[in-house]
Image (cartoon, rainbow over all chains, first blue to last red; front, top):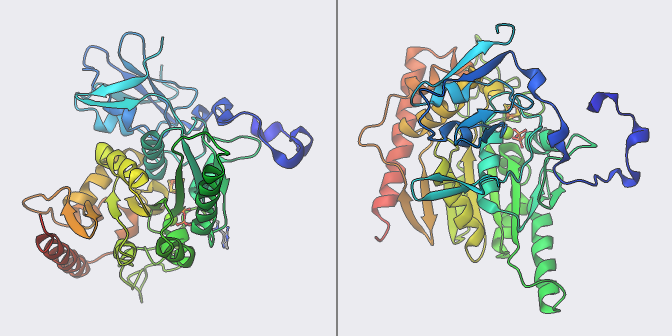
Length: 95
Length: 311
Ligand SMILES: Cc1ncc(C[n+]2csc(CCOP(=O)(O)OP(=O)(O)O)c2C)c(N)n1
Ligand code: SF4
Ligand SMILES: [Mg+2]
């Protein structure tokens, strides 16, 4: 992760060679709560997808929208705006 | 193959994220959401000049970047000047047949501090010189990146670290600077307000602003859970309430013609918006009443302009 890098790891001129390489950064470890999707209730409206500030919700093969926990910071916007209440936030420790 | 777009009725929104995941905006940040939607509306053929602030800091933690489109970090003072130079340069290259004939949009983005305080002179100059560019102000109503200092866009009655509420002060004692009216006073072809809670409206306005011939200005209210002190899941709801109470109306000014994009038959009481936010927690009933009067006044003024606009 970023904090293990030193100046020696930087490119000359501080250039970054890959556009969008921030996607290597794991922001999921900020989370204290995570979203759980109830597929029975989901109507695939994609509201959670469009309102995610972290672009952490991705369309899945079966047409659902599922959080990528590598990025999800756990804000709970998805759970609060879901018209079907198909998403619940649960504390990280709980399984 | 992965889907290229998500369908909302007739509307298609690209799945491609031009602003990469892994950025460091706070949890539930409304500015991040507004920026993500704006980037989807702009697409890949764009050059962005970005003043310092949360957007710049959170998208470019060296050696990482969230940007998948060309992006220039500017100072506070010169964002509009930098994009003016980019636009003039592209024009010259086109004249000399030195670039692919492709429409590349020039877009400047900055916070409310970077716009209504520090960058306003360069912005006014760029409007006046009639550069073909879109300027987007992401207004979270204070200097958030450095710890919630008041700006001229902070609303009356809000508490900030440099204008804290207390025994002798309500917090912000001045009224929010009307940056939208200042932009409109330049008689540019397109000026609009937007809010990420109204996702399609926001994307439509950003696209319009980027496509219009001449300068355009879009002012986006960007709820900030950290600075406004509300619970992170409320970002979308707070944006909706800002519009429904009339404290932040959604409107466009196209070639001088005003149009309201959402005009609820009855505005909700301003208290519903204020009471969710810690920055307003100190307000007394009387003070809330005063803010309600201000909202009514401003809304009536706007409706007059709408009514006076030719259909
Ligand atoms: C000339 C100058 N003064 C001060 C700073 C420190 N500074 C960096 S970000 C920031 C806050 C920016 O506020 P705003 O433009 O509203 O954007 P926000 O962070 O709220 O999105 C400040 C004061 C700076 N970088 N340059
Ligand atoms: S301080 Fe506010 S605007 Fe800045 S990243 Fe945090 S939530 Fe977003
Ligand atoms: Mg700000």
